[in-house]
Image (tube, rainbow, N blue to C red; front, top):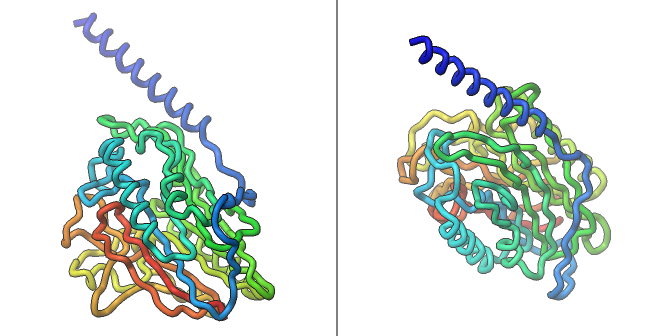
Length: 358
């Protein structure tokens, strides 16, 4: 009995040492990517130089591609599901090829993407950026990293591992410069569990003067502090207002992790209480500004932009629209829609908007 107790004690001590060593590793590895970081603009090697003009209609598309893993039968452990990696390297490649094929057939002049991995355990360390670039061979592109996490030893049956990921912007027109801005983040231990949230600002010159300022963003979802999302929105709206007052046109788009329509899941035939990440967008924040919200919604054919991933997709799964755009007053929106891909390649559907620079 004494030998057994000694063995158990040694085992407990060894496990505690492993846990302490891991916690030290996580906190030592923790860092944040620089704010106000100049980003490289990748110039296409082929294609004619196009000029952006006012008075002409253009199209922009936003899509959180879910790092290519979220097929319709995929679930995620942090949302009550099971999976922590893409199903397989082969299925991941097929999914990314399908995403590329859809984008290659699109008519978007601008496209912004979120959750684009380039070195992550969950996606077998495949660089996903070339898949998107191949869909837009004549476009300028900008990549901003928003995730550089240490190795996560959970779930124990398939540790999520380390992740490097980001947001990517494409423009059919020359981009003069781009900047990475850091979002306000949680204080304390909770910040380690969240992405290194950021948004990118890409500047596209307009014929005759001024710029189209494109903001690509992926706002926080897993936060204990509800004020963080408000602070993030305030930061974006303030920048948009400043740029508008300079005479520039501004579009901010991406994954807001907020219910943009304010209608919840009921228009999609699902009666559920909202999750913390799908609270209604606080439209009152836009009062006394020259910024407005564009939330794609068709009364006759409502299509959600995201599904909950606690279980495989079905019409009864919680669905809502969290992807869309903010625009300044000098942009005339001529249409917007959620493209119904039935969540075949991502837990998000793409959203597109047509617009004219006044």
